[in-house]
Amino acid sequence: MRKFTAFACGTGAGLATFYLTKLSEPKAAVHNSWTRSEKPVDACALWDNNWDLRDPKSLVKPVKNDLSQEQNRYNTELEKVVPKHARHIILIRHGEYLDVGDTDETHHLTDRGREQAKYTGQRLQELGIKWDKVIASTMVRAQETADIILNEIDYEKTKVKNCAFLREGAPIPPQPPVGHWKPEASQFFRDGARIEAAFRRYFYRAYPDQTKDSHTLIVGHGNVIRYFVCRALQFPPEAWLRININHASITWLTISPSGNVSIKYLGDTGFMPVKHLTNRIPRPAKNVV
Image (cartoon, rainbow, N blue to C red; front, side, top):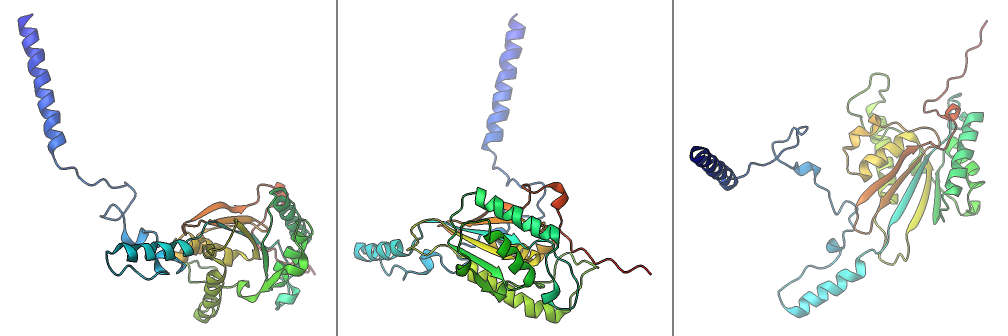
């Protein structure tokens, strides 16, 4: 018994010494197993608080000194420019259309595309959203989609704004490249500047005088919406082509008063029957001789 007690006491003392020694050693940085960065957080992955150039601290003259009067001045001016409410931006891709003819005027919705738009309008109505703005691309398929949706939701058609900046295009060369779609470099220069301008026009935190959460409905196109998602979430914009969204789908982004951006829906079409789910353009059947 004496030998066992001595052994137990010696073992316990040894384990205690081992753990105390381990606790006193400097801790190594913990890395996620999937990251390729040697640093715990890559500087490029940090959120840019002033992404919309409306961070309140960037809009107020900095403090000059440590005097309480100067600090009070700064706090008062800062409070005046701080947003109090969120902006919700709901993006709708147009319905399925038939790619016939060489101009946009001939690209009308298919019967299924019109049904898709109706389902989407009904879904938006069920969500009970009170719309502050409705904006649509000037392309035919987006105009037709918006018109069908407006028949289902509570919003006056005369108040709808049409925006050519939202027209479909090639926003930025995608990574990784794809072999079946290679626009000319000039198209990226032309479309990319326009689509980026559209992003800056519609994506920003609320103004400080906004008295409630706002809801903006934008009816547009797949490439544009996917680019907007990447830009808004501060993902690499070159990743836009890795995302797929269905025709007439709902994508919901929220810009909080702090400027943080979150996504509620991405290409949601769960409210449609399966037979109506499409994401590619149908080609007209060739005449059989």
